[in-house]
Amino acid sequence: MTVRIGDRRLELPPGDQLAFLAGLGFLAALELIDWPIALAIGVGHELARSRHGKVLREFGEALEEA
Image (cartoon, rainbow, N blue to C red; front, top):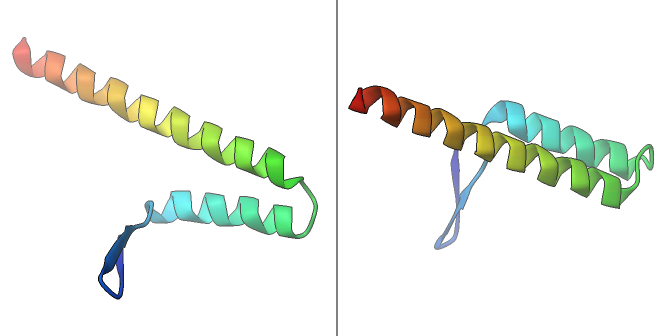
């Protein structure tokens, strides 16, 4: 989803990922988890997601070549 703020565009993650990140922020705001822990979980989640997507793209490209 893309949000326009003035002359800037902001690309938001898909709804399920946005909900996950909002949940982490909510838990950190309630001090149920520390901010550094929430940040580490969020970054790790994004790295795992982007790596998974890369692996799937490479697999798809290999299938196209076969």
